[in-house]
Image (cartoon, rainbow, N blue to C red; front, side):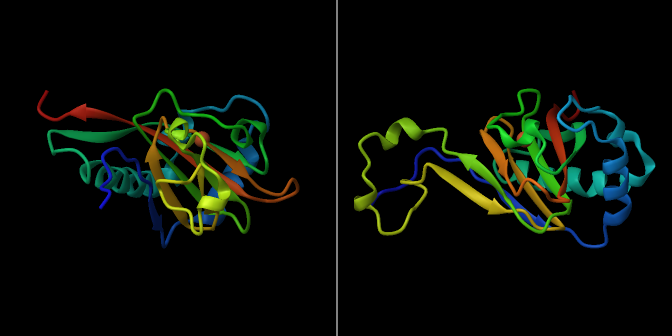
Length: 183
Ligand SMILES: [Fe+2]
């Protein structure tokens, strides 16, 4: 029997009671489409206070499934994205974070697609060898974008968005770092 020896994973949550319409309005009014984003403002804007707190809590739950309680995750950066912004539709990593998250205040279609960082191990793999993909055979993994969904992942896991060109999709991206408690 094969057992996994190296792995990564995402966690997915559905958030309730978030003021999504207010957040969508804010992102659309403040979004620099196809341009660099303000990565700090959302962390201090009052309308994001409740959501930021929930997301930091969920990121900590994710973090502590892997690591001990000597450190905690702290939000470092957050920014909004809309539509098919070129910054999110090309494969990228979040170099300043340890753990990242994406939340959708509004999304009805599209995917967040993650690329397998160990793709070199798939050399010579033939599609005819595979009936159903598993973590051992997948080049990528896609999760559908849905309103209210929160996806948490390792910041250095390469990912990108696939969505229709004309859409009203809005997402928030977060980067968290970790801090030692009692340091
Ligand atoms: Fe991203």
